Length: 203
Image 1 (cartoon, rainbow, N blue to C red):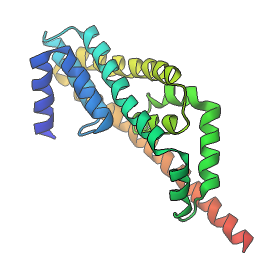
Image 2: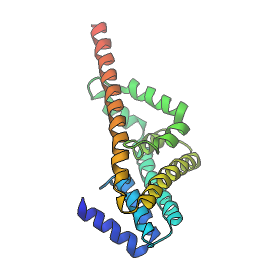
Image 3: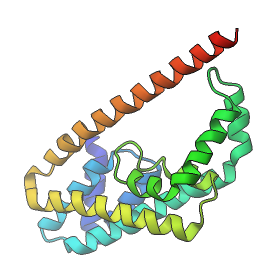
Image 4: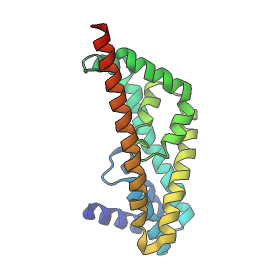
């Protein structure tokens, strides 16, 4: 990870706050390192006087939205039918499950996009079902911007205040990420158990 971090720091110091936007956009689509590393590092670099911290937050948010739009259009291009066809070939899941998930997203799409941008491990992925569901683009951009702005401001601000101790942010967010992954794993286990019970009951 060190060469990647060195490249990110060089990018930020060379072109300033726009480099934060470029790094954040790349992290959103092709995450070589998580945002909990990139953003506090951007805050630390700002504390050294290479650029203004507010500009860093704004450029990071622009980069987050740009990366999210790439994944949104990927969801649009992929579409519902290919996902359903893929689900039919997988064990314990079917097209009906995909349809219910899409309907659930349709009922909670705005909250899902907004709060999803604040959840480690979900931040980038939430853009794909938004595209599949053809969420109105202005709505998607609005809620993505709002959620990304909060996340970016919190992590960049923390890195700015912590200075050379910016890496502590990764530890704190990592603990939250671990909890999120445990919850997601538990939900998967419950889902699989219910599907197995349902199939056994039909037999």
